[in-house]
Length: 196
Image 1 (tube, helix red, strand yellow):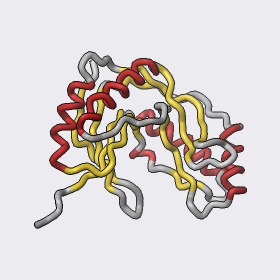
Image 2 (image 1 turned 90 degrees about the horizontal axis):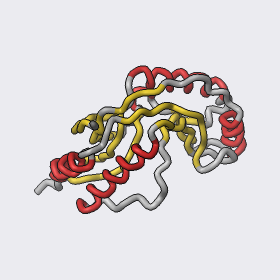
Image 3 (image 1 turned 180 degrees about the vertical axis):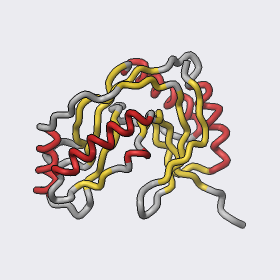
Image 4 (image 1 turned 135 degrees about the vertical axis):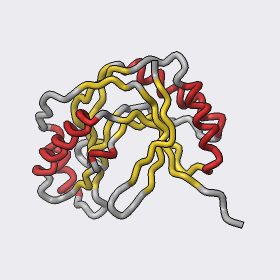
């Protein structure tokens, strides 16, 4: 008997083309400062604002998740969001992730994320213990990068002049599948739920 099919899933707000292009341009500027090639830069077309990472999930759970998300978006309105600033996780002295921040309707965004957490928890997806820090991942440290190279990149991020970045209206919540490949992850939308 074959084992049940498993899908790597997450819940996110997808970004419009204008925002993706702006983030791609930002990455190009940051890459030119990455002299040691310390960072593996994300594919701009696959960037999204993750609200909940579900991980490996039995395929038969997908319909239950869609139903839970339909409940989560009830009464939620479209969100006015904007790209705002740069930063590093865990900190600039030793960055593992370089990110662009998200501003705008943050109380409404947190309310949506909390509704998602509340509705999917009974399906076996524990509520995230860490506080929600909305961000867009621009790149991750390469495992072989030296501490010196990463620290230098962190200092670059700290002093970087971002310039004007676009805002957007988020009208839909998406259930996404991630399929890792050697050339980067492939993202497929499995469901879309309207806000507002």
